[in-house]
Length: 175
Image 1 (spheres, helix red, strand yellow):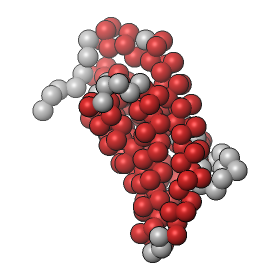
Image 2 (cartoon, helix red, strand yellow; image 1 turned 180 degrees about the horizontal axis):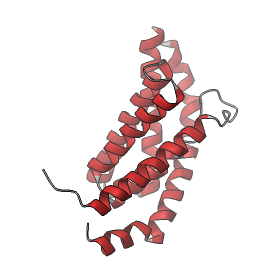
Image 3 (tube, one colour; image 1 turned 90 degrees about the vertical axis):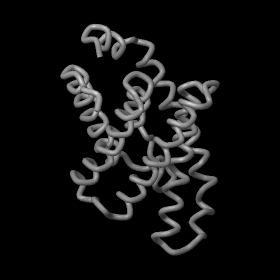
Image 4 (cartoon, one colour; image 1 turned 30 degrees about the vertical axis):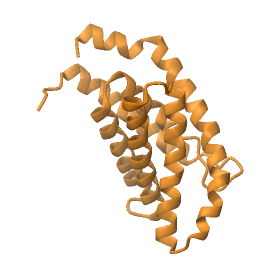
């Protein structure tokens, strides 16, 4: 097992805390006209970690974020938690696939495909939980919003990466 530096661990802790805070704050923002639609702002942090710190780190922070937000909000193991977890797993999985294998996709493209698969995962868990396939009729509506939010999240993550703030930390502390 690769040893992780104290500096990288501290940076991951800060980024994890940021993703958790964003997730909690976003859970209190009313839906943007379409029930259940959220902006996915915590995914900005996940994309930054994926591109700047690594795949395993992005997976770990994403799963920790979902778990901790669920525990803090008191929704752990509820339908909302399961939808969030499934969406996160689908999202991070496809983002890693596109990040690794399909190099022609920009970070914005990876963000959009992650947002799309997040809602696909959520619809699948809703179909199972509710025992009906009719939930799938909701998919086109939330797919449109996920593309829009995916673009916005990807653009913000791209801007943050371009500042070089994480890269400077990596160079300064050699991790």
